[in-house]
Image 1 (cartoon, rainbow, N blue to C red):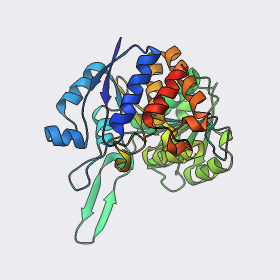
Image 2 (image 1 turned 90 degrees about the vertical axis):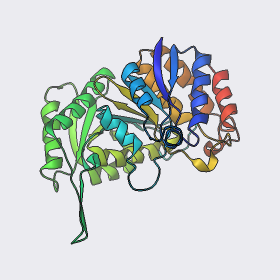
Image 3 (image 1 turned 135 degrees about the vertical axis):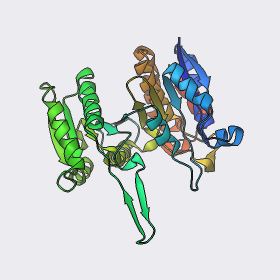
Image 4 (image 1 turned 60 degrees about the vertical axis):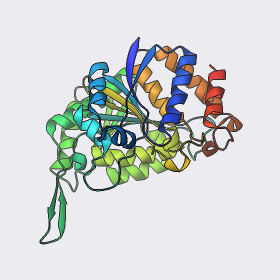
Length: 332
């Protein structure tokens, strides 16, 4: 039995989390949940966004599944997602984007996995405000170690999953020291994986190539800001954030998450699409060594998504969250 720290989150989070719990129970997934609060609900109850009970649960169980969380607007509140990634050194953000039958998009052959460095770069939070000159500076911190472990994770993933190519995405033509270091390290690491093709692309050209011919690409590895942008671009190619999973992986702890927002405008209305949360949970099952259960659930999910009238409103159907969940369960 695997114990997982479950963070329902805010807004639609509790509704889509319940969907995952119901589907996992029906499929016989060998998972026990330890539910913990974070975000606005935790702030209201405990006076802090990330309670110590959540931190201790993650340290103990080493695996978490997180719903969407809203960081309160205003000074003094740091992004909860960024805080958790830095707190547990979850340096690899992994975002698969794969075409799904029944989800209408301009392309049908997208199968791209993005490896985004998750703890440094422009998201380090190293900013300076010059009051006299009214200038804001942000430090783009890129380290050899941070680059090496992210790029090695990308090549290891390629080898483990039978992927053929890793594309290093950078802006070394302009950011010669920071982005240049990331590219240099990537080319060094690539020499240790002669069975994996390696190429490099400047980030603006990469964006153009993805919207012209995404089938040419396999695994993309990039720094924090560029990886963030590319992740949403690829999500758009396969149907949006509502069908896209995400994972934050470190050396000894992993948090899987729905990458979309908390959608407070529809919270509590039984309208939310749980697909992204479910696909993230399936990544978690593979991580826990329960690939057979994950594959069964994924097939049931895709069979449901292929029938528009069995989907939620954002996918062109008329089903509620609970009805969509039951449709998936019926196909297990």
